[in-house]
Image 1: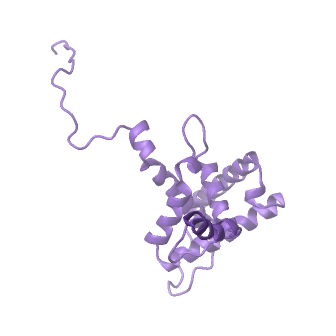
Image 2: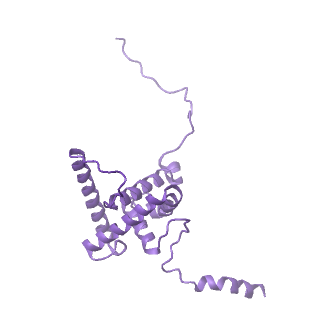
Image 3: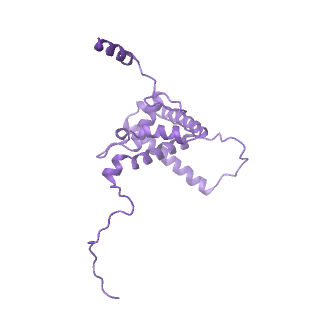
Length: 191
């Protein structure tokens, strides 16, 4: 009887089709599975798996969404979503397919090109700063740089604060650290 009741309780979750639904539940940020996969693949492109774990292995994508959901305001979240759409449209325009459908080489090439373009735009802005207009007007400029900056920043932040990084790459010691009284000191010639 317990086996039958247990099977009946588990059966709906086995039959439930989660296609189109994101893995992570968020309070305010509304994303679908394709958008979640795009950010996951972008984070993996920024921090790929080599001899060390990549962004997917460390769950950086979940960290990115949680940080954006909990630590950003509505305006920043709207900018993120608009930038995500611009990013997807730019990839679709260039490769005639989505970022998720691109190969790893195409993703890396697109991100490298995007970084170069953003760097060139920043250099041009530094040379010729734009004339400041009325601050009461809404900023209708491109959201792609802000989106990419948020994802890249959170990817790096998530990696450098991950358990793997803090235990395997940088052995974290509490301040003031350890005291080593037997540290060798070389004698120097008197001046």
